[in-house]
Image (cartoon, rainbow, N blue to C red):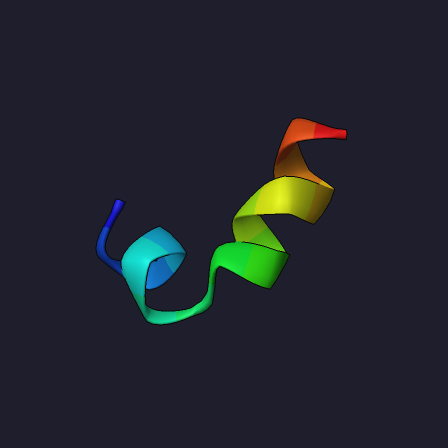
Length: 16
C-alpha cells in the first residue's frame, strides 16, 4: 500500500 501513497495514479490503474 506504500507505493499507492507514493503515487495514487499507479493505484488507480491497478484498480481499473
